[in-house]
Amino acid sequence: MKPVGINIVERTPCLLEPRKIQVTAQADRSLSDIVPILYLAIPRSQYAKAFGSVTFTLEGKLVAVYSSGRINLGCVLGEEIAVKLLEKLNALLDKAFEYYREHGSPDPQLLEARQRLNPIEIYKHLPKTNCKECGEQGCFPFAVKLANGEKTLQECTKIQQPKYSGDKNYLEKMLQPIKLEVNI
Ligand code: SF4
Image (tube, rainbow, N blue to C red):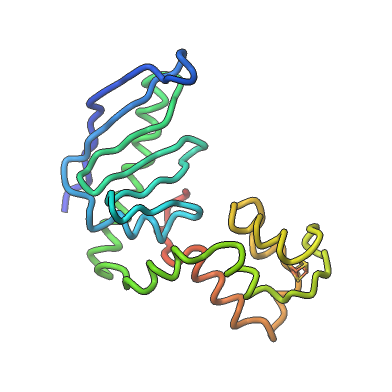
């Protein structure tokens, strides 16, 4: 299968920051098979099944990828930056298609479980000792920051202990169920 092609189809001024532009691009094929894969591979991404879209940040910029192949980039400072961002996205899409060819569509139950992952669900799987070794005031504030991507599971010292390995494995799997071997 040849690599995904992406073309910029529209540039409009950014409403909030007029110096910047918003870019719409179009992939040369449907992305419906890989939108769920991107959602499960990209930490803190948002999946909207009704719109067939996944939204995430790439290099600090908001990106929305639609099943139809449409791609929206948030406000960027010029087309050169948009092109670089799309090159990086291209590599990600190619990896996602590679994953799809090898593994097929993700299990719908995994998708649902990931969508349910919120600070309360994360908290249920933390040691709940409130030891503060992670630098937070307790396990719940840590769960909130973990959900927001401001903390990593490695920063919870307690969950590294063998007796918590079941919860640790569960959280690791839920936070990033798919790895695409590309820097995100
Ligand atoms: S290190 Fe882990 S167990 Fe201790 S407060 Fe932080 S999240 Fe809770």
